[in-house]
Image (cartoon, rainbow, N blue to C red; front, side, top):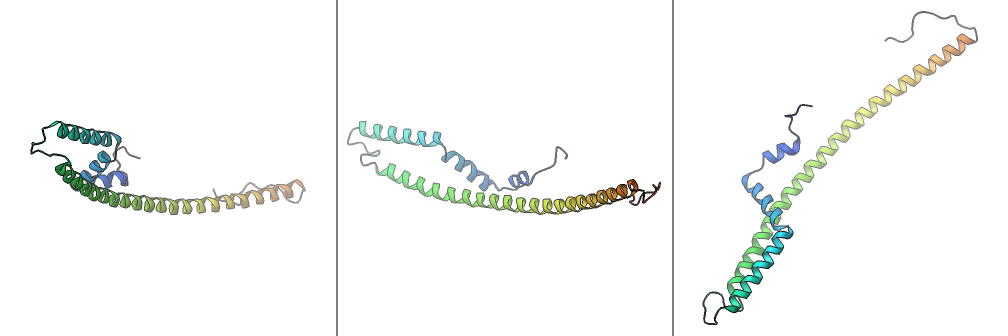
Length: 150
């Protein structure tokens, strides 16, 4: 196999659109513990800052309406991103399944050919054993020609 040969997975990754690649990157980022920890940290900082500000501040007083709006938008976007990424993962799983099926069909054909060869060799060995047994019994005289072509 050559070193520059592309696998189906590499070809698939190269065929991705910019949006599909972005969805994968965002899914991998949002589905990680560092994101969860950072998200909780931002929430805590937001709450502490807003609780320490004077009550007459117009930024985002308790009950944090602006924060609730951002969280709702984030939840909506995460849902869409996860659906896009899940759809892509389904496509990858289907391609993997097809690749496995094709490989299994090729292996089945190879195994059938090997079984045919093994059966032919077994028949040849049985014929040779029969000839040797007949020769040892004196029924045959050895001949220089072979019954099987090379």
